Length: 350
Ligand code: CP
Picture 1 (cartoon, helix red, strand yellow):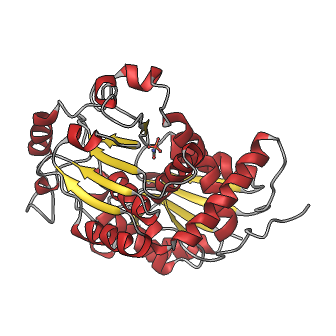
Picture 2: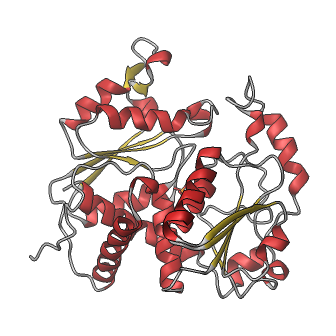
């Protein structure tokens, strides 16, 4: 078997945020993902991680992430081990320890590093007590103590594997992304969702020199650090970045639209003293007209529709768009999770 050059190219690195990698490095990952996708489709075996184990902690539910990681590592010749945090001694930050119910992340990370080859974590929302940034801190704590790579399978700030799969789908649709208008927009949902996806989308699209417009009602601002990083990306990679408060105006002339829900942050710490889920839901309820319809897509430049899934039908988007719009990338994005994650695992786990 010929091992491709990309295997182990970034051996030992963590994958917590796409911003930790340059555009050139992300492009290398996308090229590896393309190779792995072609081999998967033509049934060429790729046992580049034979005998390796990935430990996966899911503090939250998942369809796409869990199954694409589990299938992916198996297709690379390795094994994925699913860990439900409440079925072990829950890995916990130092301030939240409960004897014999929790175990410090510093210990869990060091123990698992002796059994396997990478640790992946998903944590946001209730599991992170709705304190913005706390889920990310949990993953950083794993990364600090683990001797093996740590992967962010979505926290309360970033969803880097989603961003990778999405930019891969966008490049498949339009090979030259530079200069294309990409809209990341709020869309209504009755559920409370983290900032992770819009933040990672804004970061990766500005990293690829696109003309990025972020649209949301007042009260749905992203973190200042992300806005600043997006602006820095435009200085480094070209393109542009602006924020508007009108969904229809944002959609005008767009080449790609990515409308999805996230939560208004003034109802949760550190922007509020307590977590006020009812207040957040009531505030979201004012913006039910932020829904992606077929008519709204007519003002775009025949835009590709994108969403990480699961999309809330009848809230974020109409059934007509999801089921019958011929420029929807919804299932391509889900599909690319498998190939993008295989690329990262092959390059980092070694
Ligand atoms: N997009 C995404 O992360 O999907 P899951 O919640 O199903 O994993």
